[in-house]
Length: 353
Image 1 (cartoon, rainbow, N blue to C red):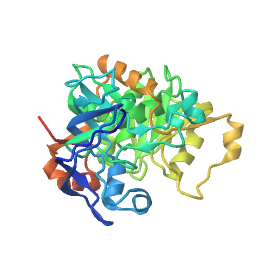
Image 2: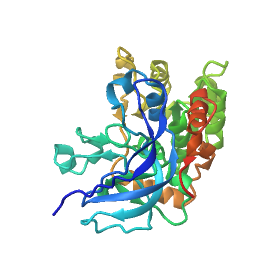
Image 3: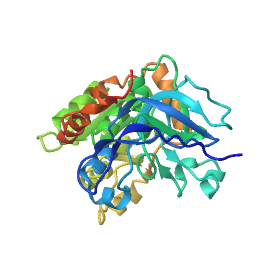
């Protein structure tokens, strides 16, 4: 009783087969399905910035990713079968999933702050991922997808969740919002802010391509900080005299965090999603004198963020413009090359129709 059922028939998956750049499409055993697990047939997956780190085999990936494991964590699929103790789901349901598997017994898990579990194991990072024909995850991590939501949108709920958590950490109604970093999450955060009632959204970056995507997603003003434009000019254009009331730092660039401190209103709220390099700092005197508040953002609040995303998407939030490339999973190399070029939004891979 309670023993895991193991399927030995092979499936195709994108595997980090060697300690070098790239991934390989190879056959691996089907995932184990325990009593509390759900086996999902993968239909759509999306390439994430984390996956790019793994593909490029940078220092973080070398220290984190087990060679021989298949990766990926953004997905949508259909339940193939469920474990013997699963009561909430049944085969045939369209689902996605929260990629952070938590311990359930630490201080934060016991008080419901699952996203702050220090023992989190990441799908596609610390355990086998979704760049495969099948994925097995605990039923507690499975997210049921509404029938009206396209599968490709369901496959990007993970990064949309990061954007939602970052933005909705503060009251946005009537606020002027500054977002530094028009990457995929920053651009989607612009859409979330406008949906949640922000008066204006200004977003900065060094890429005109990325700023163009952010504009499509609802940003009122874009600023290329190396292209002769400035946040000060944006403030003048938008009539923002006293600074931005909410600021979202998405880039990880120290200069952007300094821009936020300089252009925030007194008493402003700041979300920090971008990872700052070691040794970076800010003007703490100004931070204190302005009475600023800062919150570090990690992942998605489980599962309030998912509920808010679902409600916003079903009531008009449109982030479809962030998906710029769609291709079959066998063309994964092209997908990663496009992502690495900096001239794409999300790349969605199809595994099944």
